[in-house]
Length: 226
Image (cartoon, rainbow, N blue to C red):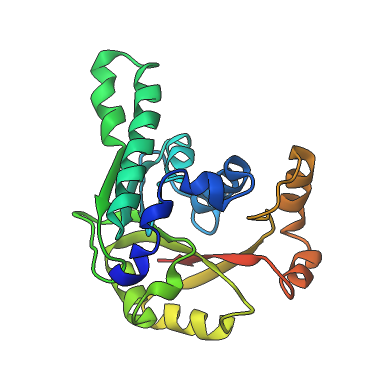
């Protein structure tokens, strides 16, 4: 994992801004589904974001009242995530009483760690892995490890043209997840859409048209439930 992650060292600064055409729209929708798909997360639940990049998902989860723990193998990415989350915390702290500031600071943590070996200091409500599941050296073993420290669900993206969906579901079930929920994710990563078009794309995710779209592009967002 470290050798592969090293290629991102020079891209850490402004990673989300360059990786996504509309980062706020894309990451806000991702955060919405992390919080609601399958089992709904509750306020103060902690989300472990493995291979977190620059932590771009973090502010959107914090805005939903969740706690965030970002982990990335690349030191430059972990540092970028720490800076981004510090800015988000400072913004939050400016809006609360000083006696509440400590709790706001504790809501977001960033660490350096490997996808295949990192374990949180305590169980988390949800674990996420976006654009990185293919980095796992042993995917079934990774699913089993994630199951051991995840209390509600594991959430990740899956390209159905790259992976056999039935095989992934079978691996998740073997790891001890009781149910798998999948939703097409139709907000494009590399094409900027106006707000109205983003809303239409999200609405289309629950229609039969979404399955047709997945034959050519886009991904599933998968929630494996405990």
